[in-house]
Every structure is written in structure tokens, then in C-alpha cells.
Image (cartoon, rainbow, N blue to C red):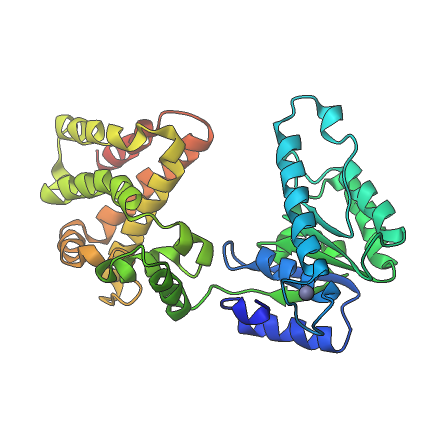
Length: 355
Ligand SMILES: [Zn+2]
């Protein structure tokens, strides 16, 4: 237990531990950086360290305060999940629960003004059980515009003994007024060596697939932990078939009929709408692998390392303009997906452009 157990981003951990030792953690912090690198986990650890009964500048995980903090965070998350399910907008924000350590996330697309009002009254009230109160606002960029001024007031006159942690992927998505009030802790993608170690410790992935899983995770510990080889391969196979078919023919002079046959093959890509996002991401990854091979010949950052010989062959046959058109088709598919239109339509762009 303790900060030792946090993986990656040593600079962020070091800064926080230093501030903890100097008891300089009042006010507002901004944790920004990519998804899946531990921003939330480190905020939770910080909440424990601020109140741990046994350790100074760290947390034990076992004392009554550490255990209670864990409970508060869990109950807040359960409460938010329950509210998200509610159809009635007024009931959704009725009787919001608040603890000394409070986790706040959007209930709708936004963190609502009622949530920030509750934060304010809890922040200026006396702590119930702990010395220090911690308010963690996840996806802080979603704070509703009506609530921004209210939150700003709390940040301008920080309540004694309270720490606010705003979490968001991109610091520049946050209102500048809020951003400028925070001390910023920047998170970075986790090094491949650490990701590999996480995967090895899990013992789920065979040694031969470790490179593939590590590169797919792209610096995200969460993505590494969730990586499922069978599901990844299932979402990749239609792409292998599609790109393989395209590379196997003289696509520059393909007839309308040939294009149609090819588009029909992409139906498999759109069959399961729930996993469409994942499938499109898989497609993009394959294309970016091809671009790297064509442009630099360097394979150090290729994700689909298990397909290298095939990727080289496709790269030769498609060339940069072939990959460019595929990307155009993918962009179109992505755009149509967000508008809920049949994915297959997107690929028409491929044939139209070559006509
Ligand atoms: Zn403790």
C-alpha cells in the first residue's frame, strides 16, 4: 500500500509527496493528462494520505480513516451511478450525499449546478469526521456553464482545510478562469516497460503477445488491464480481410462492381454497433501502422507487431495514396457513426474518389 504502489508518472507522485510533507496541499489542483494513466487513482491516494492516522506524507490503507475514505469514494460512485439511471431530472439531484472526501462526476452530460452548490456548502461547513476535506471533480471540463462562477468563488476563497482536485484529460478544455486558479499536475502516458510489467503480473497474456498488448495500450494502464486478446482479434479480423482484399487487387482501376463487392465485405465491420467505436479504432491503428512503414520503414512504434510481414506487403501494394483513401473512408465512417448513419456508406468515398 501507499504511494509506492502507484504505477508510472513518478514526477507527479514526487510533487504530491513533497507538498504533503510540507503540508502545502490547501487550495485547488488540476490533474490533467491522457485517459487511463491513473489521475483518479492518484487523487484517491492523495485523499487517503491527507487523512491517514498512521503515516505522514503517505497512507497505510488500513487505518480507520483510510478505510472510511475508501468507503466514501465507493458510496459516492454508487450514488452517482444510481442517479444517472433516473429519468426524472429533478429527482436526479435530490438529496445529494456529501462526505468529507467527496467524488463528483457528471450526472448528465454535465456536472450540474446543484452538485457545485452542494460542494460549496459542504466545503465551508465544518468537517464531519476528518481534519481535511477533499473534493475530487472528475471530468471537470463538464462543469455546467451556469455553475462555473460558483465553483470559481469556492476556488478564489478556498475553505480552510479543504483540497479541490479537478481532473480532466486536456487542461485547455477547462475554462481559463478555473485553470488559472489551480496548481497543475501534468500526467503523461506510462512507459512501455511499466505497462509490460503490469501485463506480465496479470499473467493473462502470452509472452508472444506482450508486445502487441503493450503497444495497443499506448501508455494507458487501464487499457492494458482491459486488453482482451480474443476480442481484439475479433474486431481486427474484418479489417485484415478488407485491407487484404484491397491490397490484393489493382485498386486504382477497380470497376464499380469490384468496389461494390469490397463494400459488401465491410458490412461485417458494422454488424455490431455496440463495438463500432472499438472497431474503428482498430482500423485507424492499422492505417497508422501502414503509414509508419511507408514513410519511415521504422517499426518501433507499429502496434500490430504480430502482422509485420503482412503490413509490409500491404504497404508496398497500397502506397501512401491507397492508405490516404482508406483513411478518408474511415473518417467518413466515423462522422456517419456519430450521426447514426450506416457505416457502410462511408466507404463510397473510396470509389467516388477513384472514379
Ligand atoms: Zn491510513
